[in-house]
Amino acid sequence: MKYNPKVHHRRSIRLNEYDYSQEGGYFITLCSQNRKCVFGEIKDGVMHLSSVGGVAAQCWSEIPTHFENAELDAFVVMPNHIHGIIILELVTVGVQYIEPQRNQFQKIIPKSIGSIIRSYKAAVTHQCRLGGFTDFQWQRNYYEHVIRGLDDLTRIREYTANNVLQWYYDEENPQSIKTQFV
Image (tube, rainbow, N blue to C red; front, side, top):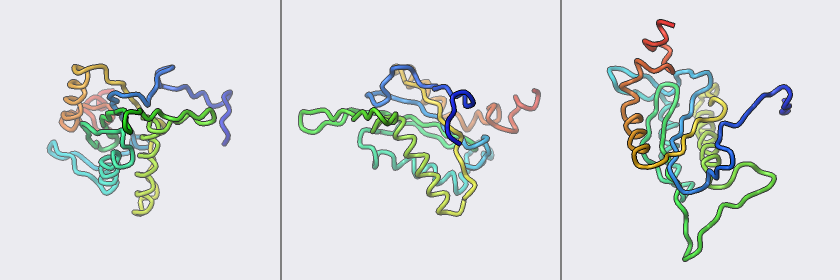
C-alpha cells in the first residue's frame, strides 16, 4: 500500500535538524515484530540465544566491517529486543575528511545511524530467511538516543550490562512482574 499522509499518521521520532552521520555515540534499541520473544530466553539470569538471536548478535558484531566509521560499544540481545551503542567517528583520507554525501531524493544518508540500522536489520532478516526462519520480522523503526557525555555513556553502559538481570521487571517481558498486576 502506498503511503498516504491522511491515512498513515507517521511521525518521525528523530531529532529535527540533527545530523545522524556526525561523530558521536548513539544508544540503539531494536524490537522484534509485536515484541515476540524470538531472540532467546533468560534462565537463571543468563540469556540463552536462539538461532535468530545468534544471527542478530553475529550481524551486530560485523557492523564495523561494513561501516568503517562505526565502532561498537556495549551490546545485549534480550528475548524480544536488542540494545547497543554505536560510536561514529570521522573517517579521514590523508588530511581530508570524507563528508557524507547528501542525496536530495534519498532520506537515508550514507554512513549515518539510519543507514547502519537499515543495513543491519536487512542483513539479520536475510540471514534468518536463509536459515529457514521465514516468519522473523523486525518492528518498524527503532529507538535511538544521542549520547551526551561521559556520564550519559556510563549510565547507558550500566543499563545495558544489567538488562538481563532486570528482565523479570521489564515491561517488554510478557511475564514481567509489572505486567501481572496491570
